[in-house]
Length: 199
Image (cartoon, rainbow, N blue to C red; front, side, top):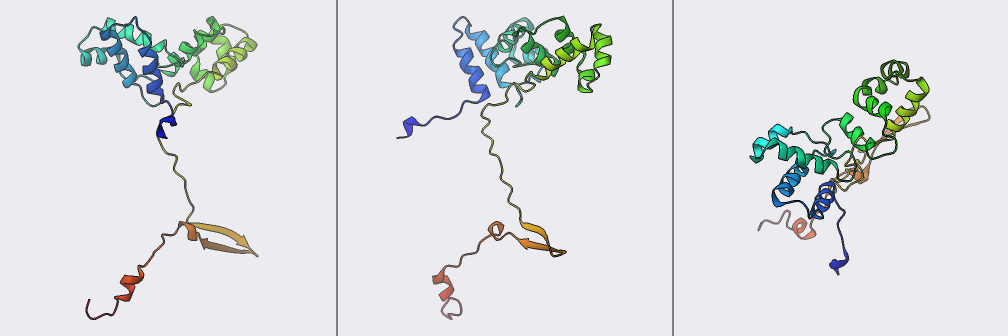
């Protein structure tokens, strides 16, 4: 009966599944790609540098860079980015909105964009404010967290209030939530032994 059950696909599983379909990858390159996927943080970003991974794996930086290019080409776009700027650019290059303005805004204009400084962006990019607003709308519509929407295996804790505070007739009423209180059950047999001199 349990054969019909399936578990949700995690972000890492999804990336490794795509790598498994790439028959053109040799064993070494596949291993490096899987290593990079295993080093992605919970948001889908790569915190390790090419140099660090190269030293740890004992392979050339060139091979690691090739593997990183392969992983960054996986779905969803933005995977294995090393910064927010790179994450947005990886998404832009796959869209029809990839142009000089959006590229430069993602590369150099994010601090100004975070403050909605359209005038400053207009001066920096040497385009009109309307063009800046259009490009800003495109960038704000991109996904800054590539792993968003995937199963994480983390339970969402439910917070149960211990008490309810309300105002009635000008008075503050504090009432304990009985459902949140620990329940104590006594075994009748052991209760019957209380006071028995034999025990």
